[in-house]
Each structure stands twice: as C-alpha cells, then as structure tokens.
Amino acid sequence: MADKRIAELNALTSTANTDLTLISDTSASETKKITVENLFQTIPTYVGLSVTPATFTSGAIDITTPISFISTTGTQAFSLAAGSAGQIKMLVCTVAATTPAGVVTPIASANDGYNTITFNAVGQTATLLYVNSGWMILALGGTSATLAAGSGPITA
Image 1 (cartoon, rainbow, N blue to C red):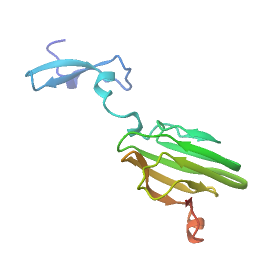
Image 2: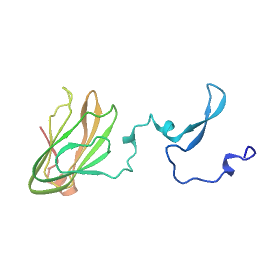
Image 3: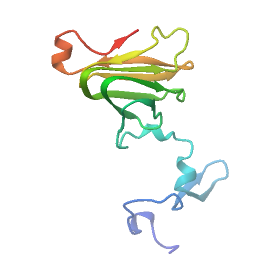
Image 4: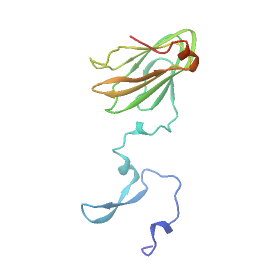
C-alpha cells in the first residue's frame, strides 16, 4: 500500500462519520489521519442546502433545516428561535387555505425593524440572516402574480 499514489486508490462514493482521510499538518510538517466527522465538526450543518425542507403547520420552526415550508389552514402562529451568527434561513409558504395567516415571530434584535412576518398566500417567501442576536430580513418575495399585484409577506 505504501507504494500507491492517492490517485491510484479505489474511489469511495459516500462517507461515514468514522471514515478516515489524509490531512497535511503544516504546523508539524507531517501527514496525519482525521475522521470525516472531526474534519467537518466546525462547519455548521445548516450550510448544506441539500437537506429536504421541513414542513411546519404551527409552533416552533426548526432552525437546523435551511429551508422550511409554512403550511397554514386558518390563522396559525409560528416561532423561530435564535440561530447562529451568519446563518441563513429560508421560509416558503406552500399551503394557504381558508383565509390563511401564518404569522412567524422570529427572535429579533431591538434594531431589526419588525416583530412578525405574515404569510397569506402560496409562494410567499422570506429569506433571513441571523446577526446581532436577531433574524434580519434579506428578502421578502412571492410568485410573479403576487409580486405583480404588490402583495407579499407582510412585516409588522
């Protein structure tokens, strides 16, 4: 094995947390091993967007899933807990029936300019960034029809 180059090794198409990889430790001028879990332990789980979005019908919205679907039938209250600095969270209204009003109350800082986000139509979206102890709004949007009509998520 010692006489093989890395490019000559068999390929692996998926990894487990306990799998090992090589790393060049420049502080020690040597090659070492590290588990995949340890290599990625400092990378936040919310960075990857390949996670299946979670759907919420009321209550606390998961902060570990980067994209969450809001499903409202009638007036529903949602909350969004504190995230991690630099975290991006996307909310998408996928169901809006019987005079819906999905009201999201995120953890907010004193100077973010809003207290709630109200979703009242399918396709409305909010993209948020967690910074300075609160969720700042990066964008509010909707379908081309709702945007053309001048409606989108409402902040209060």
